[in-house]
Image 1 (cartoon, one colour):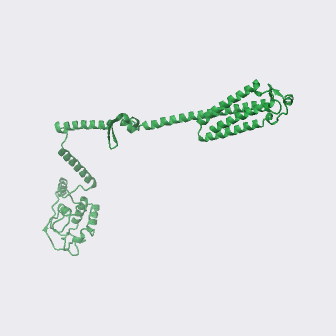
Image 2 (spheres, rainbow, N blue to C red):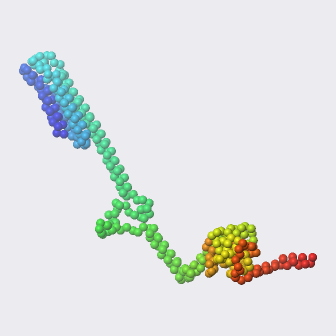
Image 3 (cartoon, rainbow, N blue to C red):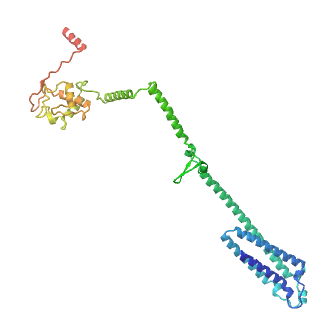
Length: 387
């Protein structure tokens, strides 16, 4: 700014010298330019406009940033140089008049002033007005930018404040307060940098606590006072009974709802074939009874009428299922109840077969029980006798 004022001061000094120069040309002194009212008016206007330019330039430079200040100072320096050149090459200064009489006779006067001086003053005034207009436009531009900057800062501040004070759905559900209101909740207690705030418990926590109290009252009345609800023992017995029913239904559906008390002889070809396949498995019966059922050093003969643990279907089923204390293992964990029944039925078919090397008799003689006749069978027999 000091450089800019220096340029303006120099411009004013040169302007005064240039304007006053014709009065001090060779010969007798001519009438001074300051005696011409129009010239004095122009000079005053030029000085006034220079002052206005200085004020406006100071405003622009003060409001501008560093880069803009440099550009304005550069433009001002160029403008002052142009004005200085115009004044230095003023025809009224270059062409010194030999005498006052010659100047008066040959020069064209405008408003009592030399034409060259008049045009120089008008040009200077025009340039000063042009500089003022440019400065005013710059001021308007700076004000606009400053206004936009202020608006942007306000929006940014509002946005930042909204973000700080904005609560998520979880915070709203818990009725939490924004961070900006923490000062109102501060109780003045601080421990190791942790401040105590007067925050209320979340509503869901309170309602959950109230629900537990209500549940406890109802539970106490139902199970401890009125005894309308089942006890723990009763609930256990009911659950065991339900489980047993489900087990029976599952076994019935699977075909395994059979044991040593309910097993019957299976005569179907598929069941006999399945039982034979189980019996012939090398990892099962042949190891002790041979593949033909004749028995060996370990197991007894299964084709005769003598049985160590009983020869009916239920006894054989029980022996296979639970095993014996004399070397017969239990197969209940390897075979299903249906498979044991099929294996039992196949063993019953071995009676009377002739193994290659049958083992001697063991156990007690077993005779098959006669199958009781049904009323239908009795009626059929009587009818045949009548014939």
